[in-house]
Amino acid sequence: MKRIAVAVAVALVAVLAPGVSAGVPAGAVPAERALYADGPGGRYLLNSGWSYRDGAGPYRPVRIPNAIRPRDLSDRGFRSGVRWYRDAFTLPPAAGATGWVLRFESVNRRADVWLNGRRLGRHDGAFLAFELPATGIRPGRNELVVRVDGRMSRTALPPAGRPTGWWNSGGILREVYLRRLTTFDARDLRVVATPGSPAPVRVEARAVNTTGAAAPLSYTLDVTGPGGFATTVSGDLGTVAPGASAPIAAALSIPGARVWEPGAPALYEARLTLTGGQETVAHFGVRRWSVEAGRALLNGRPLDLRGASLHEQTAAHGAALTPADRRRLVKELTSLGATFTRAHYPLHPALLEAFDRLGIVVWDQVPVWRLSGRELAGPLRARALGDLDALVRRDRNHASVMAWSVENETLRGGSAEARYLAAAAALVRRLDATRLVAADVPLRPLDAVPGALRGLDAIGINDYVGWYGGSLPGDLLADLRRLRARFPAQALFVTEFGAEANRRGPAARKGTYAFQTRFLRRSLDAFARSGVLGGSLVWALRDFAVRPGWDGGNPRPHPPFNEKGLFRLDGTPKPAVAYVRAAFAATRPAR
Image (cartoon, rainbow, N blue to C red; front, top):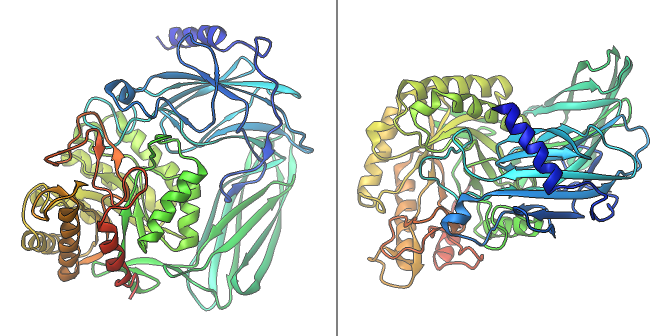
């Protein structure tokens, strides 16, 4: 069956995506430019010359990123579909290049890629980048074709066959790069820096020989930072066989290092240069996350964070955000005075870099949303652990990342969930033991919170007491104190709490702006009185589309929208914003 599918796809590409001789416009030379700072040099942004077609229609110009029918919020729009994308580009001049790869920052869900009629490969899954060797690339004009199947499947995260928690937005959702290779390519760059007098810094990476001959490897590591700090470490590592890799390990210290924390987010830069000229950059912070007696600490100080969870979604672009869209999300968070944020999936690297600079702590999460124990015992377990591995490797240099959340609201998990949690925790601690391993769970029913969470460092609580049932603040306070008694060693955070609001009316009526404001005030008051939390996140920063028929417990809903946002989908604030801004301003993030 796989051979038949590939044969059909190859035949389709010949029909739907003819060669450059069949009317493909002349390809522009891409500029060496990236939309986020960290990572390897030699990234050329493929942001012009794109077109698309659905079915047998004509190709039409399109901007990338692009979501399939983002304004269609019907059942048809939610199911998404298949779209063919095509780009013509001219290979840029690059002295010393030993090869090229194509880098896709996020495609939802399945991508089949061809270059100049040659099939390069397939990738399944959104939110995390993937690279394919640009086999067959040539001087002059080249044609890139991508078939995107945005339809949900049972092999993806989250899988098809059950309700979903956010809109299924298919397409090329983040940017595409052509990446230049030189003699050595740096992989898995990792920087670990902790407070001290002086602060110790450890830098690790792998250098891969991309050529067909043995080559000598040397490196230079330049580290710069606040107060004019600058130092250089270099080394010669001998000869590396073709296609082989060599480990790089360097140590240095920073006298009088400035720590990273909300309100004072000091950042340093590490720049690794290898034989052949490749430069790879990582910005990092000097800080220490820890848990003591159930309290989350940053640099030895107890945390009391405030913020909002978010989705990467706009009315005009769906999940295919532009840089301007991301800036608006960041502006909304900072307008609240937020020191904390989260999403259900890996965020765009540019957002993480903004949070690094602004001192906003991130609860980083894989899209393991409401899986069952049966699913965690099947093929999705390997997909979840694979995504977790990729997430940690991608984000472990970001100063703002506090926790790796390995699941969210698992249903009837049982022993399969316990085994998954143990495997996930072991994986994370092997890749990055400097942050907290966490999971998100519904607060109710409290008896269903799995005891296997005792093997983690932190628990995120999704709390809707007073919205989906129970009363504020008495029931909420009792639940939080019972949870603390069951999990005395874990740091506790509220990762969701909120109420729908889409109209005016009295505070006693669910769905009104006044009800939302009162709900948030009572919840935050109960959180403070409980004395057990390291922070809380309003659900959500902005309204977003969920799925057809969604009502969210609102007596007067607007399907498919979740309207628990502090801001409407167009970015205009709801009345609760004024209260939340004042409440956040009265809270110190680290005491």
